[in-house]
Length: 167
Image (cartoon, rainbow, N blue to C red; front, side):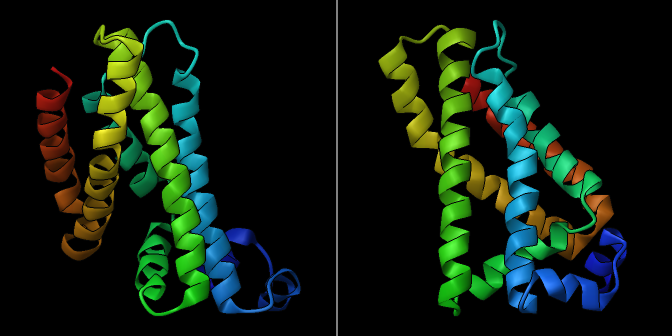
């Protein structure tokens, strides 16, 4: 909470003018973190060249972990979702939005970058997008547990795995 207030450059009272509770604030912060980062994937929808997943997803992970002081809030949202209907509803919306964005990017890559037909590219993207999101979530959890030193190892492992999938 202190990190959020400090980053917003507001007093605690001013923050609570906008949010009725810590839960509401946490939910909104978690949603915004993922929306801002995943919005970068939309740029590939109309691009002539679509970079491969083994480049895009490790970069996205590093952006989430390096550029956001609130990445640990994502863990809190996911944890709270297991026993709070409000958190579960927001987490499900975030999850659905991310799956849609991951699927759209992967479909564009498999079609324009890897040369698959439209239907085959969409089918492959729909099949693996949930697994890619799970990789990203697991990487965020591992980074929280093992610390900064694990980030490069995790990103490298994701890159190696996605290289196999993309080829």
